[in-house]
Image (cartoon, rainbow, N blue to C red; front, side, top):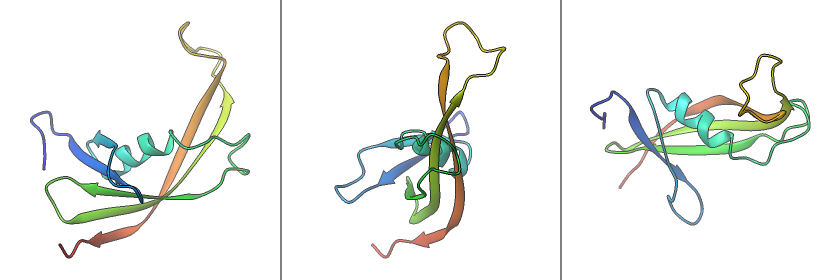
Length: 101
């Protein structure tokens, strides 16, 4: 279901339920937000790939991604409030499933 600002809400599906909700214009944008909460590795090559399932609120669609996160140094032109080391993330879409509820 699309909000007034054009964004959609996606519930993160976990074994214990759907406690977290991420919003974004696209499912990938919400998946990237979810991936940034993963435990970051020292580098992108060392990062573990973790399955991420996001149910689009108001629909029966579940967007399935593989996500990973890592730490790296902030860019030289970073704003003053940004820490020296930041968490980066990436996702790869695996597909879409439809719920049979």
